Structures are given as structure tokens and as C-alpha cells.
Image (cartoon, rainbow, N blue to C red):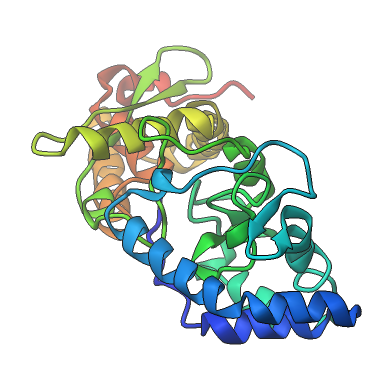
Length: 285
């Protein structure tokens, strides 16, 4: 998980730009009448997200696009504001969508390796349409993470870390680990080990995130390719100790760069495996 700086976008400007694309004059009037309510809702989102209480927002019923959600605006009005007037190319608000889509190195902040290709509604627009175009509710991510996260109702027990609001500990404390299976080629198994001193709520968010996005399996796929590539790189080293030192050096570099990545956990596990260092690294041609 990579924490991201909150988008430096004016909520009112984004909302007004989306409304600018609405062709129906009557609908525009209804959107403009709700602008102040939208600003208030955005402020409430910010304060609740800062203390991990987004679950306090009431969720809309599934479907039913005609249900009133914000003033005279329906659920359908608000979701179309995003799909028709923000995402659509050449829409007035498309420039904000493109700005929000930018992430460090173009990589998904949830998994760390997928290519950013979409925006995730942290509170889904299907259940929380009032936040459909709120910048701080829109997280750049890959398609797999967006799909895995789903569109359910948020509760106190199913929250995951919010990239814009989560505590620094998720990046500074080590909680992602791997172990090595003695197979040919070797395989990595990933797990979460909660650091001492973490609150139960933070621990639960990280465990939910690891499970819901199927990260154990997805990290293992990335690790499998890395392990095969390592075979040729380790072959010139003359003994197990040199191999262990090389792997530990790489592990230290990876942990220093990004503490909880699949690669950091993998190299640390490989360096700790006597079996791997003593010959398990070999991959048959």
C-alpha cells in the first residue's frame, strides 16, 4: 500500500465543471441548487476519513436510480455526473479525471505493481452516490484492485486503508512477510504479521486489504517470475554465503525503498532460507 497526497483540487470547481456538461437546463438547476450541500458533504467526508469513520455515512439501496440522495438530486443524477460528464472524453470535467489518474510511476497504490488504468471510488458510487465526483473519494488504481475491492456497504469491520488518509505506520512499519516453499522452482507464500503497538482497528484494515484484494495470490505470481529470473543472476556466485549476502543486500535495499512490497518480503525470505541459498535457487533449463 502506498499512501498518496490528497488531491489538490477544489471540490466546488470539480462539481461545477461536471455540471457544465449536463445538457438539460432543468437538471442543471437542480445540480446548482445542491452545490452548497455538496460542499458540506465533502467537508464531512474529509473529517470522517481522517479518523476512519467513513462507515458512518448511510448507504443507498442497491439499484433504484430514482431514489433521492442529495436535495432534489437522485442517485442516477449523481452517478451520471461521473460516468457521463467526468469520465467521458472531451467532457468539461475530463481534465480533472486525468489529473486524478496520475500516480507515482503509474503504479497502483493498492497492490504496487498493477498499472493505473481507472479511478476507484473508495466509497462506491453505487452505494454512496453523493461522493461520485469528490476528488478525495477517487483513487487511481489498476483494474484488478478496482474489481477486487467491490462496491459493497462500508462497515466498521470491513474497512481497508484509504491511500489519502491512512496513518504513516502502514508504510514505515514492516507487516508484509513471505516464506519459501522448497519446490522446483521455489515458491513464495505471503502473509501479514501485525506489528506490536498497532491498534486493533489498523490491524483489521490491513488484514481486510490483504484478503479482499487477494494479495497473497497476486504477490506470489509476481514472485514466481522474479525467482525464475534470479537463477541466472545467482549462478556466478561461488557459495551459499555469497548468495545469502547478495539476497540480504537486495532485501535491505527493497525494504528501505518501500517497506511493504512483495519484492522486499521475497528477498528477505530468500536470504533467510538456507535451502534456497544452498542450491534451491537453481531452476532446471
